[in-house]
Amino acid sequence: MDTIGVLDHNRLAVIPPKYWKAHEFAFFLHDSVLRALVEYEQSGAHNWVTDAFKQISKDHQIVDDFDILKFMKEQNLIEPYKHHLLSHLVLRLVGDMLNFLYEAFNAFEKRKFAVGWSLLRKPFKENLLFLSWILANEDEFIEKFESDNYKTLNNIKKEKQIEIFDAAINKIPNSNAFGAELLWDHIYSKNHSSGFEPTWQRATHLITSQGDLLKTEDYSINFIFDNPNSNHHYELLYGRLPYVMIYLSSIAFECFNRILKMNERTYSHMAIISMGCYEALFMNTRHPALINSLNKSFKPFLKCIHCAQDIRINKKNAPAMYIRDQLECDKCGLQSAFPFYWLMGQSKVTVSATTNKIEAGKN
Image (cartoon, rainbow, N blue to C red; front, side, top):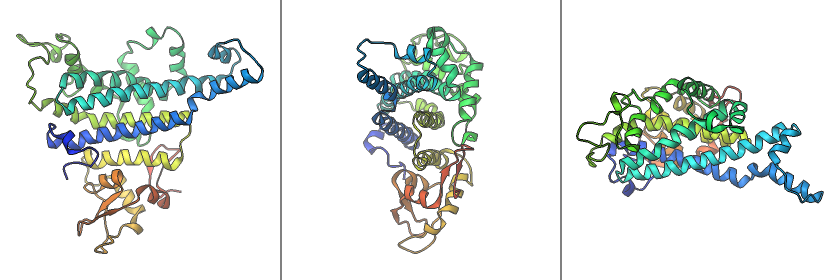
């Protein structure tokens, strides 16, 4: 199968088939984060502090408006103060990020390359960095957010960006899958031909000059004379997009988890299906670690209901198992229902709360 069943075929019509799975995977992660965002907004966790103050004001018949943030700081109510700020920041940063990503991905479905690249720039370079910073060091971010943030949260140097990524990576599941400097190269470097930054600059500006990769050619204007039928933009985009998106989704999930602790099974499910799909679709390894662990944990349930032969989860059938709860028998080809979330509970497959590693068959 050339797709993983996330999008209708007509939406993939102008994208070369070799990139379909990468495009669908990006949308799959976008939608997973969106579902989490909606659930957290519906929980009302970001309004707990405001609602509490409103109730106190009502009970004590206080009619004058007052500055909640100022009051909490003066009264040394540190935890409510931090929760109020961070919950609103995370929800709005993630919501804004998803809006830009959705429109960018749709633009690439229409070969609107300059539009797509321009829309990707802000969520990856700015929203993702701020969310990573919140996760890496929330106290430092709040301090810089409180005063003169037009200075303190602007023009962040390379060394600081890498420091932020490195600290954030250590707080998400399967942290050994990511590298801070590699992420920086993908997102910020002006000197890597396979990075996004040179193309973002060209898509955003008609004429560019800084660095060999950014010099606009003679008798040309950036993107204006590009061949719309060329596939080189897809090659650049999808060579790096799955890696950046799996990091982005991991950061978003963990930021949500800091606002309101998620059910351990639900959090583990989200983390495992995201990383599992990435492992199956894009990692060049003959013995995928997560798939091997799941084969051991799910062994009592891995038997075909049609031919009665043992089934092994592999890189070919794993994406459908993660995304659609279906597992294909590699002997007879039957694709049957496979309740992945339920089986996780039966087999005690979790993300370790202490090591932040994805583990299977652990108590």
